[in-house]
Length: 112
Length: 112
Image 1 (cartoon, rainbow over the protein chains, first blue to last red):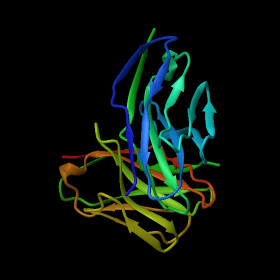
Image 2: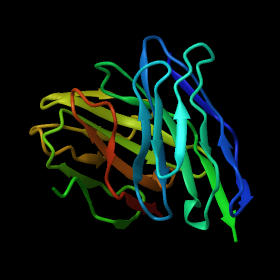
Image 3: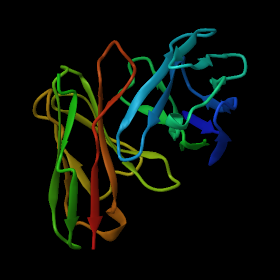
Image 4: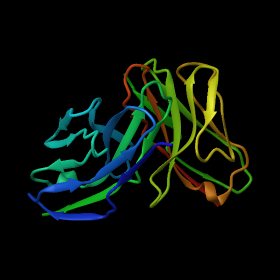
């Protein structure tokens, strides 16, 4: 089956620190990969995506590169802000699949 | 576009009561899904649909029914509410050729 494994949280950083949240996956086919973000009291929203190997997704200073050889899609940001405090989910979707597979989420807290 | 809408936002039920959580999308998406989110357990798929008239079970379908009579609507019915169904419920949709999910704002359900 398909699965997504994320770095366990919670993660607490100081403002302007470097962020890495690890994500690895197993899939029976060739997936598209995603990072979603959930702010308190809200639903998930797409942060970035990559649809093929070596693609780099980026948005709002966050980046992740689709690494097929290591089946990974690690999320990075060079300088986090307090407003980045949220829960981050790694996910995959297979071509023509009706459903997506999500990791358990990583809670990030950024302190001033 | 309203995107994905869910009603109600909050609900309190007594054990044994039934209710329907509503979900609608105005993006003409083929795929729709229901997830529940519990602390420390990430997102778990309840049911999903790949088009009007077609539904399938996810990983935690027991105690829930769905139907998809139109492309726009995908209601989730709780047959006889139990305290174990206390959770936050999210509806999501995506188009056939795009793999990212669009999430609703969620329904927070408490069963006493």
